[in-house]
Image (tube, rainbow, N blue to C red; front, top):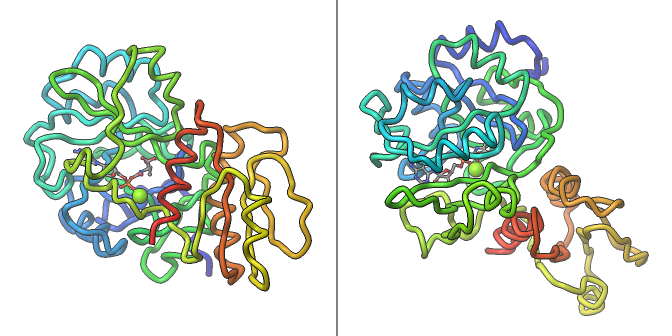
Length: 318
Ligand code: TXA
Ligand code: MG
């Protein structure tokens, strides 16, 4: 029997029992557990095979719940929360003592967001505790944007996937931390940089592990398919280099019209939003075809194109 279900009551029961439930969000599916249950949090790390040094994001139902989790909210954090919550923004703020060290990997900050998905908001409103939820994939694999992706990863490990359809944004939340109350981007994500700067002004990006060792999740190879992947400006020229190879290509909007290759067009209308929403499903689909290599087209470095390039770049590391 499938573990995919729309039964919110059942999810409430399982989570209250320290079990894990995969939950839909507007970014990617999360593998959720009660933040105050040591058993549940241990289960998250062991199910994902995630190292304990990599802290988790706490999901809350509303801005009002933030007060019970953090000790200090910088002015610009208030502006960002007001502008983007519920939504694909994660804020890293000073945690209060109620937040277990296991969640934050011993750090004095906690990552928190209000997700923008009606099913998960309804679930969070019924629970007396917030949910810790990393993306619902084994450590280092492609994040899931459909219930079926989670099922393929974890059908033997968890009891329920709460179905919320395909994730509308399709890439992980943008993470913003604060250094002396000044906002810094720790992970590019589903919010376009320009939209964030419209709220808080010019913002520094410390998106790479070597620039920001405190954000241990930002490993260079992440979000990666098993198939060798390359990121190039000119896909048509690149495929000429490989003869007698089974090639998959991932292009933004324009078909190569080339014979004998598996091609996925991320948005025929040239919408970055649509391309982001389709990105991981396309990577899952190409990865399942036992190709020799995948060649992806670099996006224009504006708006969500920056975030998409970040994910494609990480997919190329081996
Ligand atoms: O869109 C998302 O954010 C999804 C959905 C499910 O909400 N979640 C997600 O979680 O992407 P995860 O665990 O795959 O990524 C969490 C990232 C990691 O890079 C981690 O290092 C960083 O957040 N993080 C968590 N707590 C942090 C902290 N206190 N300081 C700096 N980085 C932190
Ligand atoms: Mg992840």
